[in-house]
Length: 585
Image (cartoon, rainbow, N blue to C red; front, side, top):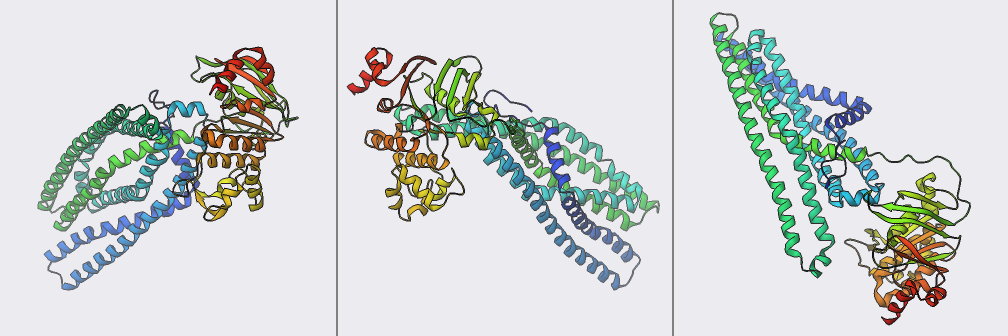
């Protein structure tokens, strides 16, 4: 695996790794591969037959044979055309089906790995890189499988059979045609080492351009608010220019390669014509055999030309495939087997340290205990480390030091299903998935009945507006569907929490996006959703801290105060100043 630079931290598989992956999946489908090759061989054979019988026709005409020879040749050519066309079409279908099956496995595995990537790595790599892999790169490979690879296979088989037919007509004529092979090899040896880095760099440039565009689109409100549109446009323009520059370099390299191949074609055909003339004059071969050999070699121009015209697409698809395989082969921690179950719903953080980049620590030895069923509020200024601590507590981030225990058990000893059954996190960045509202909620519990979904909505106070939607719980929401307000989206997230029914809930400023009018409603929804659960709340609004059993004040990654709200206010410390500032608003 390789990592081309700090802006592309997701790995790219090497050529050997990509080929081993592809070979393993082809072996799993050995029967389909053999059938595809046999049908393709039939199509190639049918394409070679007309040139061969044309040579026979030339000799028969010179011998002044009857018209029945012409009829036989015409029938043979017609049948060959029908068989060849049918076999070629069937080959294209079989290749597309086989490639589609393999690509489906790769796409599913890539997405599965992407969904389990640590948040720190995903944030460093950038969402644009990952999105370009599962969209642009997957589309590139899909197009190659359906359009390019069938042509490549047909061209290789046709070229191989044409050479065999030339040798079968006369080995000396075949040898004359083979003298062009070293020129083809030299052209490929010149092109391949130069082309692979170009195409890999081209995919990286596309990813960087996508990253710039995604960042600008996701942060469009911030861009407008700070009036930095020109800067972002210049960054996008620079990334696009770099991508275009690499693409022009690829085209220039390919054009020079085509010139070398054309010279090989000219040399090969000239050699066959001269050798054929000399051999015919010496009565070593017939005119028909020499003519058939020349036609066969000339017919090689089409498959070779096809290979040339799609070679850049094959290279691009290979680069895209390597990027997909790179993500699919990312090593992930193995799922733990067995292990003790949490004894209760308590949450303990012991001397927790965390760093995003491996050097500067965000959390410095934080120790915090949340007893089973208790509610603890985290408060502090922006950048104090509250969200990081919440993500570590929920298992979204792994601490670089110290330990996190749920009911006395480390989350790393729980498999994904058991971990999600014990702890869940809700952030202010909620997402409404496209589809019926009831299915959006069933993401938390796939087998939930309509009654259970309605009950969860009722707990968080969202059932009235959900039933008032045009089609009730079956209303399509999310992108392209019925729009929901930020407060409604947050209530959906809280309803999912109720359906998931974890023992421990972590709310990371889950009411921050509602605005003043909806904040009280959301606070009531959050309180109802977490009632009876061990709850760690990152309090954006200090009114959430008032109702907590204990308040923990975090500053610069360290706990500076903790205790009940009243006691901390009376102490006149950091929390008291925060509370005074909050009340003055």
